[in-house]
Length: 145
Ligand SMILES: [Zn+2]
Image 1 (cartoon, rainbow, N blue to C red):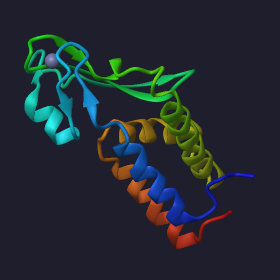
Image 2: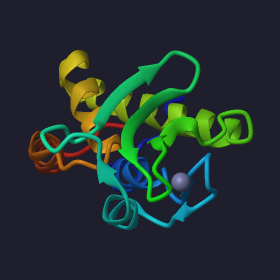
Image 3: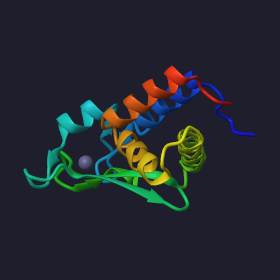
C-alpha cells in the first residue's frame, strides 16, 4: 500500500522534504545554523560564481543536498557532514518520503526521471515551478489513491 494516498498528504510531504535539513552544525567549530536563511547568511560562497549547492541521490540515504560553503570559522563546510550515523532514522524517513512522493507523481502519469529531478530540486530548498504545475494539474483531475 502506498503511504501517500491524498493530494494534501503529498503536498505536505513535499514541503517537509524541503525543510528537514536544519538545524545543521559545523563539524569544525560546532556553530549551529537554524535554517537555510541563517546558513546562507552566515557562510560564504567558496567562489562567487558557484552556489555550492548540489543535489545528489545516495543509494543508502536517499536524496541529499551537498552544500559547500565557507563557515565563519574559515573551514570549508559540507553541510551533509552532519553525522549520517546519528541521523540514520531521519535519513531513512527522508528516503521513504522521497520515494513516496516520486511514486505518487509516477502514478499520476509523470515521467519518473523528470519527477525525480524536480523532487531533488525541492529537496535542495529550491522552488520547482514544474512541480507546482503538476500539483495543480493533479488537483484539477482528482488524486488517485
Ligand atoms: Zn565552523
